[in-house]
Amino acid sequence: MDHEAVAAWRAAGEARDAAAAVAALSSDVRLISPITEQFTFDGRERVRTLLEVALAAIDEITYTDQVAEGRTVALFYSGRIGTTRLYEAQRLRLADDGLIREITLFVRPLPALTRLMTRLGPELARRNGRPGLARLVPLTAGMLHSMADTGEKRFMPKAAPR
Image (cartoon, helix red, strand yellow):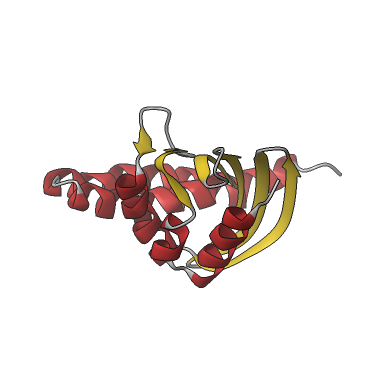
């Protein structure tokens, strides 16, 4: 199967170009959040909004691997949010026309995911007309990030194999 849309998606991500990334998507695309099962981003416009915010928050996106079987493609990249390294796996499912129909995201380590929450949440809330929530999200996500980051730096090293 031709993976032209996947190549365009990768190039757009590395260039941090949300408009080019959206061009690789089917009109009925669904993006499944790495943060919560409470919602998905359905349709090009909602995914565009997320991509604009995410690509502004994540620096140095470099795709490292691609694995494909039929209409399913797995991509892997590394990036950075401030000083926090981020690694993401993306499962892409392609429509009959070769455009990306479904995106499922997986982010690690936990402090990268919680840092991402602190960056994306407020701006997404603002764009959805929820200014009060935009002020609340940094507080709640910030507390979660503080716990995850402290655990990563102080406690997990003590449990490492010797």
